[in-house]
Length: 287
DNA sequence: CACTGCTTTATTATTACGTCA
DNA sequence: ACTGACGTAATAATAAAGCAG
Image (cartoon, rainbow, N blue to C red; front, side, top):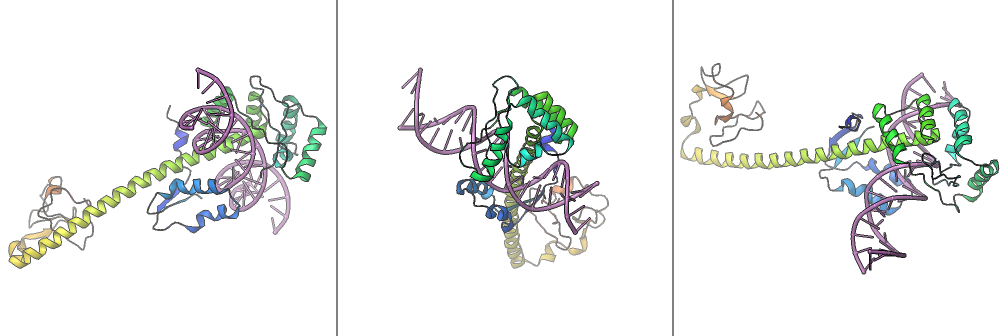
């Protein structure tokens, strides 16, 4: 199917650095995190060296609502804190959400009041929050909609909520989480890519170092035997300005650039440094 | 400048599932 | 084969911060 949204550009900036950015964990440190989870998050990319820098940019309780096991009847959770206040707020969407609640969730006024009292007085103790599990049909519809557009306007949200027999807030949350998951996957994929790039560069670096050592050694032995200019008269050597390779005088306008990659006279990417490599059987990476 | 409504980000809590004794 | 404990992944939901209008 090729889910293009997964690969959409989220404006994520990626860079390679030698050290981890201490700011990374600013938010994590701000909370008294569960140690295991904290470790889990860190471990995910800890194996990446050099460090990768990625930059893009609770516990409220619930009272289980009247739960239906029917098809599309699964509005099982009822938030009593911010989301609840939101859903019964003042906007158009919220007013409609109120209607939605009437239609889908059979919750008495007294239970709402007790929810709020509970929230204020008991500080999240007691009733465990129940979690809705979306049916396959609901998930499929949400996924289809997400493929069409990753965000919803209020009207679309209402319509989708009505269609799926969910509260608008639930649809909204689903889209929030879905976007977050998409971004996370993309980040992981880009991390993997960077890791591969890093390995390639390290390998290339090793190879170039080795090549340099060989050249140094060669230079030493050559100068010991005879002056360098005697072996290759400089008068006959010149650099081609277009491909930055050494060739004989008069040749540089005629020589075949395609074949030149196998020439022993290879030049590095730095224009100031000509590299003579008589034994090179593979082209320098600069070309 | 404050407000509002939205998104993103980080996190928690619940559920489903796999593994193992 | 069945079962219960345990670990873990997935994900719904919450909270807070940031941002645009």
